[in-house]
Amino acid sequence: MNRLSVLLLCITTIVIFFILRQDNVKVDVDAYEARIEALQMKVDSLNVQNSSLMKEADSLEVRIGEFDTKIRNLNNSINVIKRETKQRLDAVDTFGDDQLEQFFAERYRQLQDSIN
Image (cartoon, rainbow, N blue to C red):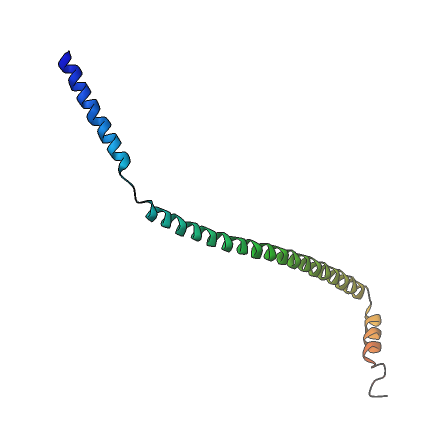
């Protein structure tokens, strides 16, 4: 067992030596930091673009609301005109032939024939 203990002690010493030696190896973090800074700048730029696009989207939503209101008002006006036109057409349908002739004669001032 004595040989086994010595062998384990040697292996443990070698492992500890390599672990301690690896701590002394320095990693070049400057390149990584520069890359992180470049990516952070890009993220900041994208955030600025995103906020400007959000503002533009909000203004476009407001304009869409205004256009919807205008369309609704125009549709209401169209419906009113259609109803009034239908009422007038229905009123004309109730006129007799004599009443229609008198209406158009008065409207276009042709009560008197050119023969008279």
